[in-house]
Image (cartoon, rainbow, N blue to C red; front, side, top):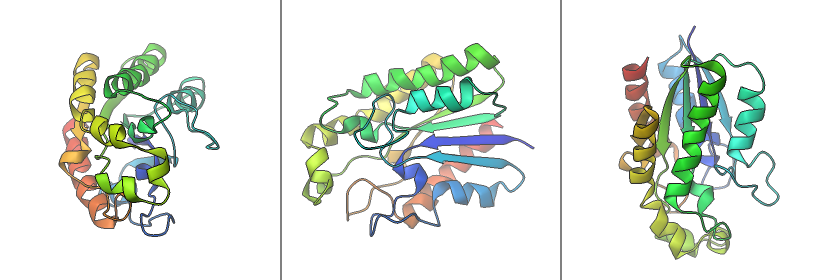
Length: 206
């Protein structure tokens, strides 16, 4: 049985933009339905960044968690999907899209240093941060106009990083959108749209 890791933030966990509950219909669950012959491992955490410790958010430093769980301990994945970057744009980090992309390269490099080319990688650049996030009661306090602008650079930067590491790439923003309610998270319909595109990539890769 092939094994796929889905590693990401709240849009992997399934944050509901309506009430902050966990969506039962999220892209990882749709993948489980479409690939019942595969083992799909979900590792999404609200607030997770690529490399930063987000205040009051356990397991938020993506690369450190990845090292602890999947490099220092034995892993046997056939495909590792990484979708991170939105929380790198919290205004106190002042992070560029290129910095996020470089961190994602580290996921593939460090895994391959230990396991060789035993696993394929798929880097997914996140959906865009929308202007309406800046009017949200909470997200307007942690994101700013620079966050919105920098999210436009994710696809190009992460695509280039994927090419340098010889891994697969998908632009989530070309296939799904954040909700009008918070400008950060997808609803069930958008999760399904993204899942369909990810499924196409999985078929190409595996």
